[in-house]
Structure formats: structure tokens, C-alpha cells
Amino acid sequence: MLEKANEYIKRNHIDEKEKSLFHVTPETGWMNDPNGFSVYQGKVHLFYQFYPYKTEWGPMHWGHQVTEDLVKWEAYPVAMAPDQDYDHIGCFSGSAVEADGKHVLLYTGVSQKDGKEIQNQCIAIGDGKTYEKWQDNPVIKGDIMPEKFDRKDFRDPKIWKKDGRYYCVVGNRYEENCGQIVLFSSADYKNWRYEKVLLRNDGKNGDMLECPDYLEVDGYPVIICSPQNMHAQKYEFHNGHNSIYIIGDAEKEISDFAWEKKRSLDYGLDFYAPQTTELPDGRRIMVAWMKSWDARVMTKGQKWQGMMTLPRELKIKDGKIWQSPVRELEKYKKNPIIYTEQKISGQMSLDGINGRVIDMTVELTNVEGREFKVDVAHNEEYTTTFTYYPEKHQIEIDRTYSGVNADVVCVRKIEIAEKHHAPKLHFIMDRYSVELFINDGEQTASVVIPTPLEANEIIFTSDEAATVNIEKYEITF
Ligand code: FRU
Image (cartoon, rainbow, N blue to C red; front, side, top):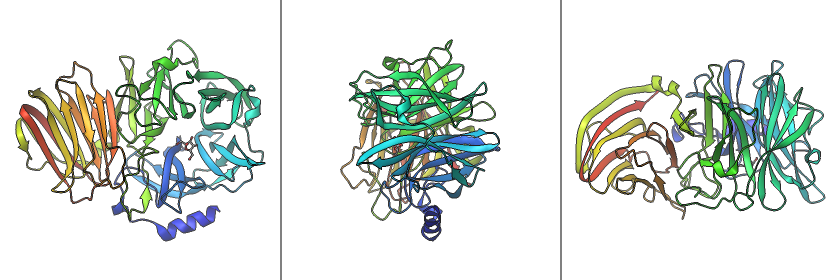
């Protein structure tokens, strides 16, 4: 099965120009969650949920790409296919760790018995390129947990090592409608012991917590997860399935987490199942699937579906996670175009400010009137609009005219803090995506756009007067 997948990819490999330049995309077919984001022998590895044969979800394989600088990625052979009795329905999401000089993948094997689906945790051990599934899989079966813990929704293990012991968190369902995250520990990553529940929600909001991650940022324990079927609350949690984080208590070792303290990780239309890793220099980096389960914006004829966000550096400040693009992107920023204290009134384009593979910061220094707009990926036919409403402290994203064919959600409103009357908007565009970092990464918004590449203008509009500093770079290899 693995060889078949690798052969298929060789024959159906998509031209790089049809995809993003520096965002991870599948070589062909379908991609969802990032998996196994880890450092092994000095390189950063990223695996992902992968179905090579269609642009739709199917029996999950693990695709694999590797990078030395988090910007340029190299495709490696597919690491796993669903070819065992304990994972024949799919090799679902999981994570990786370097252990005893080997690269160990911990993932969910999905199988079916007597018409019932079961999810168990399994391992595969490899050398950074080829992986072998462990002979005694599964290594964590649901029945080592207390009784009311669901055996079917029990998936997406995230492994880490601390003080010589291995730990992992797994997403789980409790009774009918509570989501929870359970903790296990092990001396050797093969024999696991159930420890405790780290987080359980209120049963009204998010019935299964997918893709949990436990991490430490600036001395604080943090839990990240992706609750399915959340209720929207004012401007937050509108993607149906959303991604949240909760900061724990700094004094406690692997603390419990309080559901009420949840916050959105990203305010855009396309962001799910993030996973983090720690780099040797201590930075905590996050990458997410830049898509939403319910939104399909790709055009007919596109031979791939799904991509990753740019890896982002995480920091904690004022009780919140702040995100910034990995600093390695700096060295690929070329041809600066800079405008200082530029007045915008009415609708304007500015010489040299255009493009679809760019890094552009628009810092408002003064804003009057009711709205200030930035239209990107624009031409006579297409546009994607970011509007700032100063009176409402709101930013609105609108991709209605980005070339979306199907009836998908196109508008999202974001509330920003009142103190940022003149916000700073940092756009990273890579052909078919826009990632917006608001006010130095206090909030982010990720959006996929299917717009043809010839729509590359950028238009600024202010109904009264605005003054901006603009810095724009092309990103090229
Ligand atoms: C999240 C998810 C995971 C699962 C995987 C299957 O997007 O549903 O919970 O492991 O995708 O592809």
C-alpha cells in the first residue's frame, strides 16, 4: 500500500507553480491535519493526514515533508499507509518524538470490529525517512481508561518527553457530549499508564476535543485543542470546528486546565488542528491546517486540496498567546517598497504595492471616518477585502469575490482591543492564502482564496482621511 502511494505520487506529482511557494501543500490529492511536527537529527519534520488519490478525504496515510529553515520544504516518501488490521480504516493524527536515536511516531490506528469502529494509539519507529510499525501495536487501548470514557472517539495523541519520562495527551469523548483530554505516561514510549483527565468541557460546547497539544511557553503550561461543534459566542468560534488554547497555572507541573479560560487561536476562516514543536533554540513553533472542514473554496481543476499555515512563533504576553511568522522568512524578503506617512483618501493604488507572494505591513498612524479598506488579490473581476471600522473596533474579512464558486462562508468579523485605534496589519500572502497578523500578532486571521494569480493588485480605500506606513517585500527563493 505504501509503495502504491509513493508510485502514484511520482506519476501524479503536481507542478510546484500550481501551489503555494512556501506553505506546505500535498504533492497531490488531499491534506488535513499537521502530524508529527518534530525535530529529528537537526531537521524539522512535518507529517500530515494525506490521501493521495483524490482531492477529498479518504483512508488516511501520513505524508511527510522536511525542512531546515521552516520556509523551504522537501517532500519525503509517504511514511505510513493504512495497511494493518489495527489501522485499516486509517492512520489518523498523531505526533513524533526523538527517542533512543530513533524517530518515533505515535498515531491513532482506526479499525473496525463487528461493525463497530475503534480507535487505539499505535507507534511506528524510523530513521527520519522510513518507518516501521511496531509489532505489538496498539500501545494504548481505550480500555485502560475508566468506564465512561469513549472507545471510539479516542484519538490524536501528542507525545513529549520531560525529565526522562514520556507523556502523551489524547482527545476523547466522555459520555454523550463532553469533550475531554486525557493524559498518559510511560518510561519507554511502548508501555503506557493512564494518569488523569487534564481538561473536560461543559458538555454544551465542543463534544470531542480533537488534536490536543500540551506545551510550555514562557514558563506557562498551555493546552491547545480543536473542539468539534462549538457554539459561536459573539465574534468567536464561528468555524463550527474551532481551535482554542487555555493557559494553565505556572506553578503546577502538568496542571489541569479550566475550560472557561479558553481563547481563539485564530480569527480567520481557515484554521484547524494546530500542532506545535520546540526548536533546539527554545522557540515554540505552531503550524495548523489552513482549511476548515466545512469550507471548500478550491476551484474546479485544482489537483490538490488543503495546505498548512506558515509556521508561527508563540509567545505569552498579558495572559494571551501572541503569534508571529517564523523569523527565517526574513531572509527571503526581497525588493522593499516603503511608504511613510502616506495619506489615503478615497480609493488609491500605490506604485510597487502589489503581488501575490508578499509580506506587507500596513500600519495606520491616523484614521478618521468610518472605514479603511485594503483590497488584495484584486483586479476587475476579483477581490478580497479587509475592512477596518474604527468606531466599532472591528476588522472584517470578505472573500465573497475571491473566486469562490460554492456557497461557502466568506465573511468574518474580528473584534480588536479599543486601545488599538490605529492598528497594525501584517499580511503574508502566498498565492492562494492570506495570513493576517494584527497588532504584532496579538490576533491572527488565516484565509484561503482561490483567486487566479493574475489578480495581483492592492487597493487602499478610506472614506475620509487615513495616514499609513507601508512596507512591502516580495518573497522569493
Ligand atoms: C481532525 C481529525 C482528527 C483525525 C483526523 C482524521 O481534523 O478529525 O481528529 O485524527 O482529522 O483525518
